[in-house]
Length: 262
Image 1 (cartoon, helix red, strand yellow):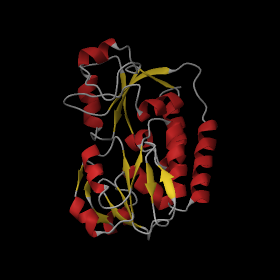
Image 2 (cartoon, one colour):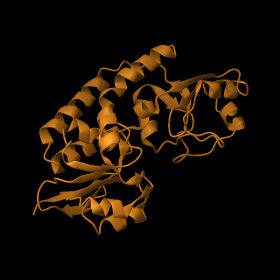
Image 3 (cartoon, rainbow, N blue to C red):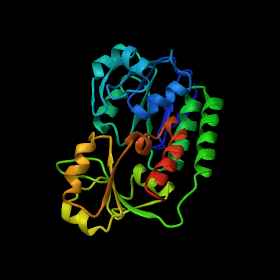
């Protein structure tokens, strides 16, 4: 019986490589697509929107933080893939009564690359996973960074406004593409006031497309309060999805740097 160690250093045991997998993490669901595991993946969350074919055809097992244990049990999975931050600890512990749960813990690019390799190993797709991580490393290595970092604030929520701290994956992505997070001294996802935004000396405010779906109208709303700060919309998936989408993030970051004049 093969054993595997997840990113929380928890050992799990499988009788064989899993033939029935449930993914509770949208960005990892997309990775499983690129690992050619169409037949093996039997359940996904309602937020696993990529690819559209899977979203339309795979069984939905609830939301990332509102998992339907009965539906998962009915799928008779041999492996469940979860994430420390995106899923609820108590719900994951309950799922361990159904089958082994592989828990990921991604907080920067290195741990994302490790996760991809580990998922490749446990699903018997080692070579494919390695080719993905090699492409990601190559694309990031080719990204041209500005001589001076642009001081930015990355907003993920409205009413109240919320940003990202220095211990998040998004912060690591900002650093990798040549930006400095004005709120890097904070932890996780702090609320910020207009006064704090005004006093943070931000050269740029980024409004993410997720989890709050910022639109053009929100630029005008915030611009009226911060007239001297440049405000733009950004693709949240490029900053926060830590699976195989990372292959395309550096190109997006490069275009963003050009757009911001850096």
